[in-house]
Length: 153
Image 1 (cartoon, rainbow, N blue to C red):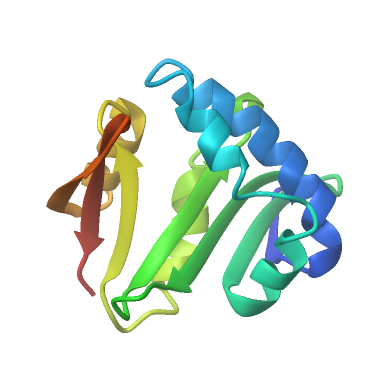
Image 2: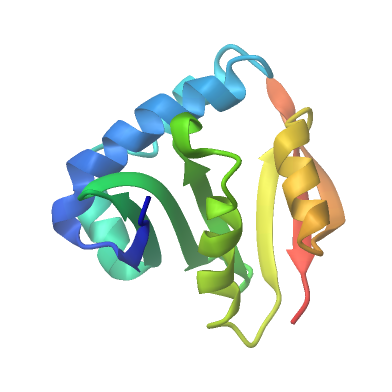
């Protein structure tokens, strides 16, 4: 299987939405029943093209089907934040998440931040395996606290 990584373009909006519609529930429904629904509201098809143009998005494709994605933006604290790292469940366990992370890390000269909900053991293990350290835990009622991690360059 050949996986191609490329920068996302606005025309990928529907395929990106389709990806998150599969990944978010499979990842978060076991942590909190409404967490995935909240996260999905951030991925409206009509908003994705502008987000792609303003941030840095890389998609992973197999046979022109988007199966993974990573995105980075600058937050209100002037931090580079990996806002998304998703791999379709059918393609997990093949180090695709690591490849996507490398695409981002290789471009940065500052620390990279990311967050995940407390209880997301897969995200916690991924972050630890790649050198992220927990920097803070922030309450996010009624959802689990957000665990913020940092990878220094």
